Length: 220
Length: 220
DNA sequence: AATTTATTGTTATATGATTAACATTGTTAT
DNA sequence: ATAACAATGTTAATCATATAACAATAAATT
Image (cartoon, rainbow over all chains, first blue to last red; front, side, top):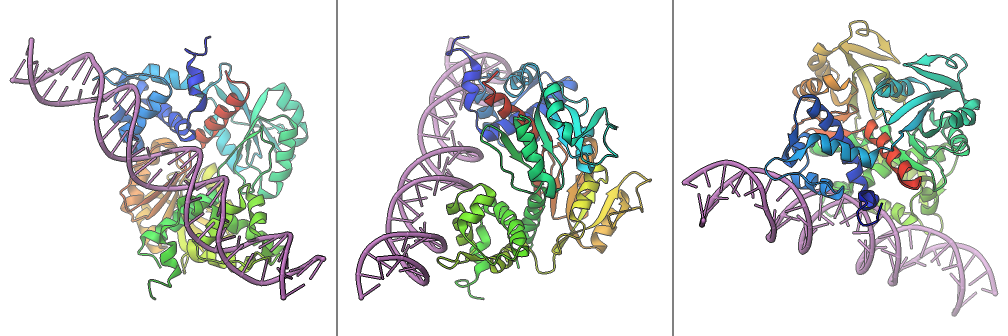
């Protein structure tokens, strides 16, 4: 592929926020497609996501796709193109580390949904959970982490252990060669630069809601 | 209170990201305090959270607090001041709507942790869950929502219902007078402008991790 | 055929957030 | 007492993101 015409090169530096929105666009585009909708306008996408049509068009521009005037974007093509950006050809495997309520909720959520992003293992310290199957996902003991990560080609970890175990678990994940971590624990984690870390801080999010509720309620 | 000296007025327009960080600072400051640490430098806070000391000082400046040279910030005072920003005097009550794995995980997480932000009720459509107690939280049927929200003075909803029920549940929440929603469902929700909406999109976050893992792994 | 309209695609501007630069000042060392 | 230092506090510059302005054009209308 020549550098000039390679669209993935153009997409090499997509803004972070655009990546997030592409994921969200795709989810809804899939629903549109399921409903038989073949074309969609930027303002329709915008309305669904409560953003401006310009933003939608800009995002789509950045991934190098073009719609047709007066007809909008071809839903199927757009989905495919977003897939080219977000997915790998062979898909990636993920593991849930910490099979508590949250971990099981995530397993249930993903099981069988995406073909390009699969949860293929769970890990837990609790012997009662080990070797059980949760929504089709086998739960292994933590000390088999390195072994299973290699065998199942797991590159992503979803960290849902209690705060006190988060640091230790992270070290093991890094040692095992994990490439990306989605951290739900409220502890700031230390990972080397080649491991991508994404945080979901539910407590902070809730406190933020509280802050804005307070603010709107005529302040103190 | 004069406008000039009222610190809450100054704090009226704190950046969104600062609010998030304040919540995170506080969590760790509480731990520091528990360990007996009475003073802390900006670079220490920064190291914990993997950000720059300048950012920390700037955030603290914005809330109108001052440390002492060579000694850093008084941990206790800083915690208190962050509390003034984030908390209300009497605290706020929250409800978990959708008592599945995710909902229960959140209930378990918060139960008895924060005095200023309490989960006081759960709601679910499943008759088997109704009137059960989860980690001290009573689960009500959805059709008692308005009633219980008023009685328990609930202003915040944590929405953890399946995607298909999210829109309907949101309407009911808005009708019931909820002031802020923390939405875990992957559906874009429609709320009037006086209701603050914060989204946690776990699927998008995971797809983002996948994207960056792909990107780092030598592309394609 | 000419004009209007509805839409996309792109460039320019504005806003928001982070980082850098630097000014300030107690404390320690000489 | 003076100088050097280690920290804070603030202003300025840079960077990222979103919004606004507008250019282009195919389709519909007259």
